[in-house]
Length: 302
Image (cartoon, rainbow, N blue to C red; front, side, top):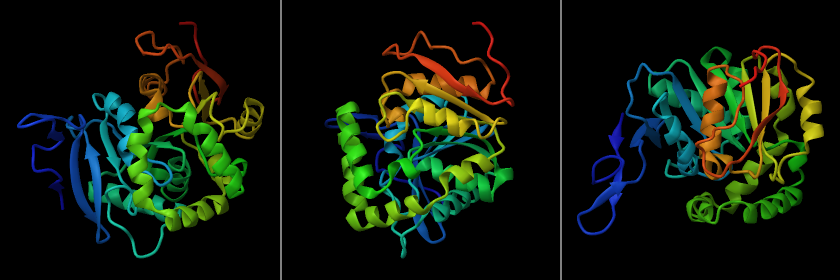
């Protein structure tokens, strides 16, 4: 079941008397999955384009992912859902954990008639993608893990809260206007339950089990991520699929703060091209590899 979510044309909102303006370049829609109303955004490009689904982080909706998702919507059939229990989607009777969210993502794709997709996640969305790949390896083409969270580096809760508090002033001020309503709606009890699920999730084990081409994107100012030496140590445990790239000046919410750089990087990854800076991206943030698995072609001189 699909229905639009606005009284004005889909994807538009009012900006003064009688003057609609785009809320997003993506259409805003609803469907029902397992009896739960699910809100999502979808590109209007031909349905035969490669599918790319963006998976949001802890306590959030997909809204903060839109700056990057919109930049990729011209090449991919783009989907940005609010997973059940998050954002504008309906609540569930029992709080979902990481495996539940991975299954919910698969059932959302089932509902849309999509067999296979590339998944792009931020923060908590990355463990969800790893779990999706574990249970549905034939349904994921590639994985893009942006600022993956939930590992031992974010434990215990007080440490994670300290990391989040250090990250906040490093993000664009406008991000708070986007994420605050999501956090308020998600609530403290759900936050505590979801954090426990993340601390119990075998993030490293699932990551190392993935056999598909995987891009991990890190910000060099992200306090929720370990240093480069630890990242390289982990990446060195698998040599067959992982490409790791850092973005200078980025913190945790890269999908929002550096959408031009990230979209450019994802396009290069999807085309198996060498990692080079995008001269047209604002901010002039430098991209550089810190690890490349053998399944990726070697980098060439630009």
